Image 1 (spheres, helix red, strand yellow):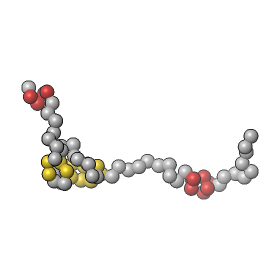
Image 2 (cartoon, rainbow, N blue to C red):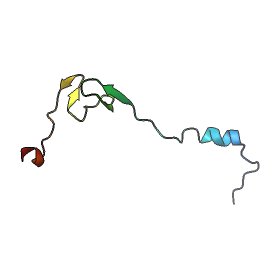
Image 3 (cartoon, rainbow, N blue to C red):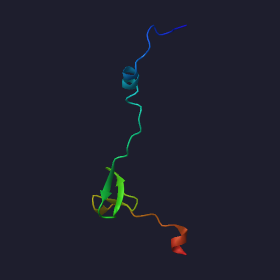
Image 4 (cartoon, rainbow, N blue to C red):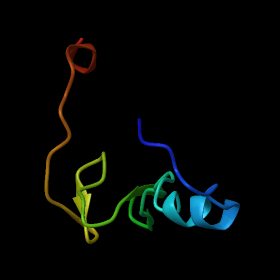
Length: 64
């Protein structure tokens, strides 16, 4: 059975685990809608770079 000859130090262990972390989503404030959105993505209301590029989907409750 493979057993390490020496104990792994705290520094070496933490350097190895340095990439194991949560990623913060890259959010930008959209002045047109006043909401935050992901960079280089269309906002939930259909705006991109200040212009309406997608019509928002209408639901059945809007038509009633």
